Image (cartoon, rainbow, N blue to C red; front, side, top):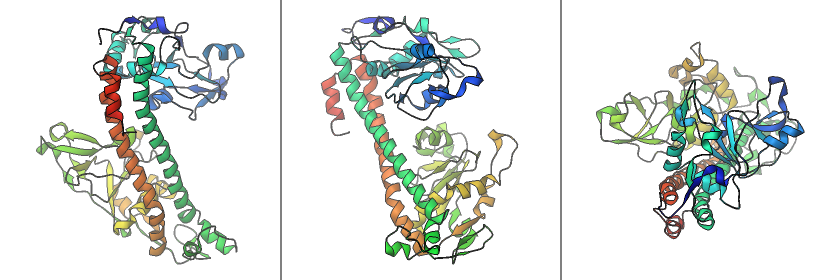
Length: 439
């Protein structure tokens, strides 16, 4: 660490001491104030206002255990060692919110320290090392508040803390903005698909003599009546066909371990769950066979379909893109149909159809057979309707992929700057030059 920054006990910059979260019996859960649990802590390292479970508190409990903006939260215990001590910061409070008993709260004194600086400190390699020194292993890995407050942490001058927090925070703010924009665009695309191809809103409106609320040239593409089919009532003139009439299942197997030094763009289940960004792995580190990821494909998981995973890959190098064999790579028969294929595969009717074909008795082993999915019946609208849908939704998908790419670059830059700024190896003016233009 920088030798010109004094080290102090964490307790010296807190308002009061740390506090463990609240424990309430089951009968008090379901209504009341929001409660941060371990799921929110690990899913939102910077905690904004998100949906949470609720718990009933007395006024005395509220006074003691409700959160404030800039509070720091630490995972008090975890089934895995790396989870214990995980630090999050409360960025936004829109209503009374408390936290569960597996979490420790620390409330920094704003007159002495910048909370966001401390958040980045505890997420830096040095901070993670410090938290590791107080890790205890009993039934599960954990830390205690009494040990936490004794940690010696560096304290740069407050203006420098704020400058460091601003630089790193501006990168995270842009990443968060991209995430929110993507969430909005994803909702828009799903809403259009549901309206046109699940609820058949334009057809129903025309059948009832109402305005479909679409431009005339788009409304004219939809019929004004329905017909029966094996999947129930569908718009007149539309068809039910097997999925492989729309897209082909491509399962070209590759053995990355045969190319030990090659770097592969690896689309895995954990990578999907972490943020839908593939990881770069060397062939020597990949022990099992994988599927090639065609450039224009959509990946649908065959594992545990009760938790749908449908991925729109942003393939950068088709010769190096591979995926877990838990994914089914589908390539649209018409190249421009990828937006329709993606939205169709993640739609509720298709996911229900996939789930109905599951085999295996336990959640971790439940899978579907790809060849069965490839021929399952699907609704196939006329080409001009699908073309119009893809024209509407394709740009939304392109913007989402662009935001994901940008966020990956910003995340890498943040992770590079974080330890250097926290240690004092890189000073603020030099970091500002590196960040300039990135956000």
